Structures are given as C-alpha cells and as structure tokens.
Image (cartoon, rainbow over all chains, first blue to last red; front, side):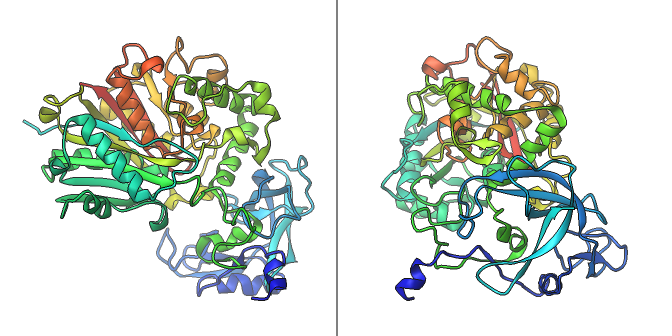
Length: 143
Length: 391
C-alpha cells in the first residue's frame, strides 16, 4: 500500500454479497428496491433466507414501491466505522415498508438534519453511490 | 431427595481501563479468588462455564483449567453470546452440579473490553481504519445495515429508546435519573470503576454518543474478570460463606436475536421472561429486596424495570426519578452501580454483587436484610434472568 493510499480517508463498509443477497444489490444497481417474498404463501421478509420461515416455501425478490414510514430513529454523533466522518451527525431510521409494515429496513435518512426526524414520517427510497466501490445503496428520504 | 446446588464463592480481579494482561491471566486470577473465597482449591474444581462473543474477546474454559494445572474438566460449557447469556451460564453450572455431572463448577467472564476489543465501534479509534485493512467488507445480515453507518449495539438500543419516548413521553430526564442513581450507588462501592457522583446537569451537558444516548447512558467498558463457584448445597453449607441458591431461571430469544425485527420496541425480551420466572418461582417483583438489572445502556434498565413488574409500563423513568429504585424506596436496583458505573464485566458482575448482598457482605452499600434478588442479563430481543436467595 502506498503512503498516499494509507492516508486516504477510508470508505464506509462495503457489502459482501452472497448467493442470497446478490439479487438485492443487482436490483439496487438498477434503481429498484427489492425484498424477498415467499412464492408459496406470499410472506415478505426483510433479509433473505433459503426457506420461508412460515411455510418452508422458496423466496424470490420482488420490487417494492420504496414507500414507507419511520418506526424509530437515532442520531449518530460518534464514529462507529470508517467512512462516515463527513456525515456526522447523521440520522438512521428503521423504516416500515408499505408492502409489509411489520418489517423494518434500516437506512440512513438522507436529507434529514438532526432534530428533524419524526416517528411516523413518510419516506421514499432513493439511490446513492456508496463511496469506495461500485455499489448503489438504497436510502430513504422524506417523501 | 433432589440434589441441589448453590453458589459458594465469588472472586474478581481489579476492574480497570487497562489491565496490561491477557484475558487468560484475568480469568485465572478471578477463578483462584473465587475458589479461595469458598475455601476450596484448584483440585476441587471439575467443571467450568463461561461465555464470549467471539474467540478474540475472551478465553475458553479448557485454557483456563489447563493454566491452573488441571489436565482436564469433567464438565465444561463455552457459550457464544453477549450479555444475554450472563445469567444462563450460571444456571448451566447449577444444573450441571444438580445433575451430578460435576461437583465444583466455576463460572467466569474475562474480557479486556476497554483496552482491547470495544463493542461500540467497528473502527480503529486511532487511525479511523477498519480492522485488518483499509476497507471493511461486511456479509450476512450486516451487509444491509453497515453501509448506512448502523452496526453497533448502542444504535440498536437507541432505536428502542426513541420508540419508548414516542409512545410514553419518556425523555432525557428519565434516562439521566438512572445514570445519576447508579453512580450515586457506585460512590459506596470501592471496586467500582466510576465512583464520582454526577448531577443531572452533568448528564445533560455530557456529549452525545448515539442520540438519545449521552456518554453517561453507556456502560463503563472495562478490563477485568469475575468468577463464581457453584457446588452442592450440602457441601456449600460446610464452606466459608452462606450459600446462595438459584430459585429459578428463564431465558428468551426473540426472532433469532435480530433486534430490528422485534415487534414492540417499547418492551424487551423481559416481557416474555418475567411472567414465566414469577410463575416458576411463585414470587413477585415486590418480594425482591434488590435487583441487579442488566444495564448496558440506561434505557435497558428502564425498559426491564418495567417489564419485570417493578412499576407499570411507561412509568420506568418516574420510578427512578421518585427515588423508588434505591435505599428507602421499593427495591434497590443495582446497588453496585451496574455496568454503567461499576464496570462492564458483561453482566456476570451482577451475579457477583447479588451474592455479596445476599451474604450480607456488601459493606457500605449493603441492602438491609437482603434475602431475595432478581438478576437479569441481556437487552432488547434476548436475555435471561434468575432469582437468587440466601440459604
């Protein structure tokens, strides 16, 4: 590693896709938010599994509206990982997606300043470049 | 007649910000102190129980036994888990002794959680770099959260606290009351890492970590170890101290321990543990003289104080603000100062304190006539708890 590279600001954590999560990132690259859904009983899931926990059926990713509501949030003031120093303090929310409000998607709230976030706030997904690689990251922002 | 087990000894190291020694050295010292406290020797020990989050943050039972000159253990249990198993590992040892699997089991937790691996960050605090390189690559469930800057326990619990604020009108004064109360308790605990009292003004002026948590809402990360000796009740009665019995233990894990999946974030795992534990023991919250409640963050103590039934749901903050959780109130919660002020020995120090209190050996912080204590472990989606009683 060159000295210049060693001194460069480190990027935020990069996803390490596997067979179950690769479709999620492929959809995100196309500007789509997709969630795993059981093709037998139609139950949604927030993160991929091999089998549906309710009926044992197979999951497939389905594109969702990207609309949701803030279930809860925090404001991060502290460095928890490399790559976020320029954003501090930043807001992270748990978002209940419209299609499956019992689930929660964690997301940095884009364009929301500390003190502005509200539980129950309507949000909509947008896609940003994740610094340090080729990933498009779905993030929620005020609808 | 059923063979019954009891806690017969307790031991610990100094709790510090930098132990300068390995977790093996810490575990060994705490084990020796606990055996000595019981009046037993290394040769008496034939079982061990411990827990760790990962290989890197502790040392296994086999290594500790070997370091003490033992060639083997007849019963051992190395649980992978966080604070949620800090009561379970004690119950495991009690049940192993009661089943006749071993005669003397030592339970310990050793960690360098201040000078070594810290739970509050993924980053190298000096260089700001990811451990092991310049880029942190994250798989599994965390690949969906870490790129958002969301990946450490304090953040999960901050979400839960905010939801409680929203539902019940809870606020910073409520969390602050817990931080101030536990610190006042720690002022009477000579082995607490933080003994200097704080005021509500200090609390409000302290820096934010993950809002709504200030620095004083977060556990006092520490280096150290503590240990307990478990043997048969019959044998314990012939040893140096009054035995302490476990009257019941319950554990619960919700939704694979994924904190973001929990249905109602104004409650914790304790909403499931509490009814079963009170039913199992035939006891009620108001029977407890004291409680050592897991307090990785102030909010954990607030939510579990409610769930275990010390007050109504949503009244946790008021319960502390009105002085009902301290000497002269309804129950003394965390007389040692808790993880917030004594030290973050991952919750096993709560059982150490419970035993000291139930033996009547807690010095200036002794709860008068202490006979029954609830010990809880864990937060949010998973945890365990037990009721301890003096013999």
